[in-house]
Image (cartoon, rainbow, N blue to C red; front, side):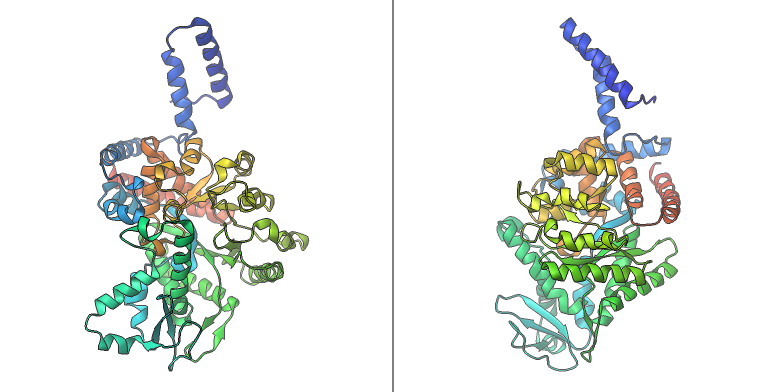
Length: 504
């Protein structure tokens, strides 16, 4: 099909519209066709030239999508906790699991591994203790002897002993799983507001903290996370990591440099065992509740870590709930520090993860761009900021869209209404990621790709949409230009094989 330059298309449409206005006659089919072609070409993947095999596969996906949209239980219209079993039965989801999706660029360190692995593997290790707090949540800890009482934890129980006394260990394990995820059968009743769901979200992280910061588990957890993403057809990962103090059984501790070196060593090991996996990089994160002086120290630490570990260290971000945290502008002195010292510390800011308008937090989008963020995390509020949207497009700053996270944390209920649906229709730079899959009972990236393809994209999304989203994940990564070229070559070979095997 011949693609006219956009300026020519606009001129032609203008002429036809003027003619139509003067004639007062029925719309010209040529005008209708031209307008429809313009819209289709602007969407994500709309300008890609597809092979015959890709077109055949796209037609298959279109038919499958038509069938799913006729269902009274259309998954993107349902809360993910209710939609998950429906998605698992979907032939589209099955295809997406096998599809080479490129990279996952927005994933948090201690929510990347399914909690079933944490409970059925980690909590069965020796010296694992548990306590139940005053608010009926759980704390877990490894210790060579009976742990000392802590705030909210006056009585610790050795899990090995507790399981021996319990007649039904399955119930105990399922109770632990519920404490480590947000999953519930009735999410609307359990989480009536954003305040409630965020409190529970942060509580689940706290429950897992003593497990994942135990040094032997820290290593194993990360390796298992790489494995789970690799099994979901992901070839590269960028991890937002807090790099907390980790501990050994004897009570000794390790600092952030030890954590970053561990990420580097485990990544190298995984790549050596899986040559078609390109690796991972870490975006060092701190909580946005920090005060100005603490933020200054954190940015200094980030610059030092980048100098020592340039291979694994990708950049810096602030995490935590935006609506209750400090806005980016509060940290302007700390965030200006790299530039003042001539250090190139890339930023990857969470910004616009809010549905409140006109607040200081709502200004994070423009401020993120002013501080030259490499990507925008979530960007849910971007449609309310036309200047920020135009600037991010002009600068090629991609939005990291995490559909399931935005739904579970109550920014949107029906994913067909997600703002990223508009961004996809405009071909705005974006990538799909999964944020905290373990917390949502998800895994890898395929669930979020399903929600984006079927819900955000609707009937207009096609194989070209999926292809461009996968390529975007490499193009907008922190990899060097040489490694991006290598990654795209490897991805293309995997893509061609996938299309060949599924387009018969």
